[in-house]
Length: 157
Image (tube, rainbow, N blue to C red; front, side):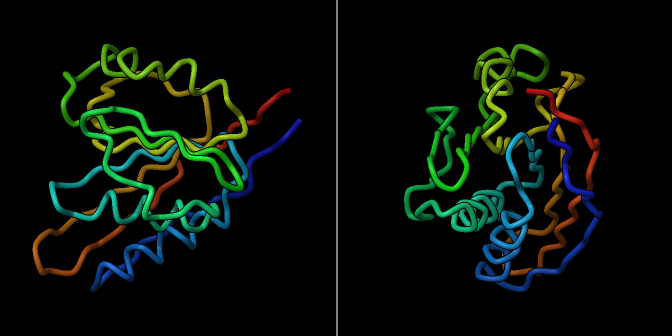
């Protein structure tokens, strides 16, 4: 049985794209697979920049990471698999989860799943270790990035 690390809530202020990227990279060092990161924030807040940093921390070329607005899911292989999902163009509710085959992706315990516009999932139940990452601010203003664990799930082989 693999038990998730004890994840502590955190809040940071980012004054630049580089700082947002670095916060994602730092978080990646704590991931072991099976985590679901639910990203929320307005257009231009830095969700994809944060995900690029996360990818870098998972030994994935951040240049390969782009917003999957039209493809919906972009898989990447590094230290762990990364599934980068964007629900922006989908209707809210369980239909959004089904549109990206989320049930199937959640079965991959060696992967990290990042979902941009995660609020579109509505009340969809996630069985894995879930972190809510809220990014506030846009334009030239500083960003507040709040990382809050929602569950500490035990995974069974």
